[in-house]
Picture 1 (cartoon, rainbow, N blue to C red):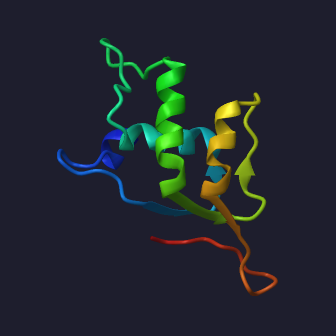
Picture 2 (tube, rainbow, N blue to C red):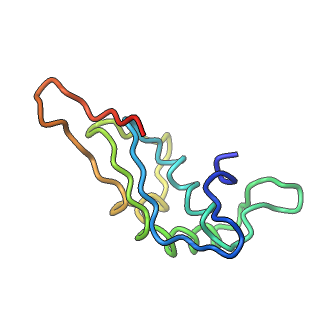
Length: 108
C-alpha cells in the first residue's frame, strides 16, 4: 500500500521526494525508490521483487532525489548489514531541536 501511495501517476516522474519522521526504519526507506521507479517491483504473483540488480538500479537512480529528515539518534539499526543502505546515506538528514529538551517530531 505504501508503494502505491508513493508511485507517481502515469506520465509523471519523480523530481524530488522530501519527507520527515521522528524515527526511521531503513528498510522502509529502501522501499521508497521502488515506488518511484519504472522497474517491475512485483513478480507475477504480486510479491515484491527479489531481483537484486533491479533493486540496486532503483536505489541508485532515485537516492539523490530523496531527502528524509529524522530525529538524531532515532534510526533503527537493522538486524543484518545491508549494502543497499549505503546508497541512501546522503538521503538521510538527522535533526536536533534547537531547545535542549526539544525533539524533532514533525506533524506533516
